Length: 96
Image (cartoon, rainbow, N blue to C red; front, side, top):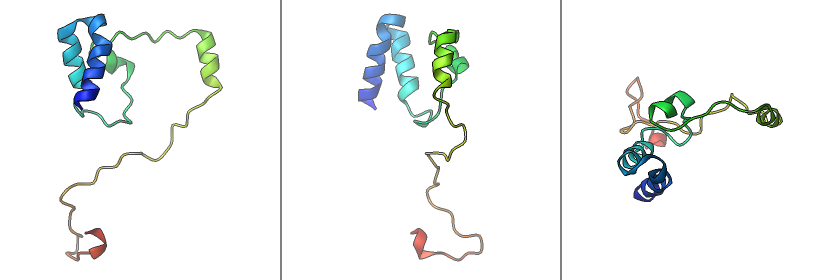
């Protein structure tokens, strides 16, 4: 994580100053979100990132050529540790 934090800091420091770059690099790399969580424009603005949502019609037309499926299986699932017992008290050796 240090390597990623350092990389993000170096991307940001010239644009927003050292203190804000350190703070934002930490927020973006501390594990607050999973790797497949899309940070919205509103969230990015609240973090202090410069965001522009005005896309030219040319960009919109290009994006229409490559539609994204909004429905899909999640790529990250949460498995609690320790793994809970079966409701009836039976333990399956397959889960161990």
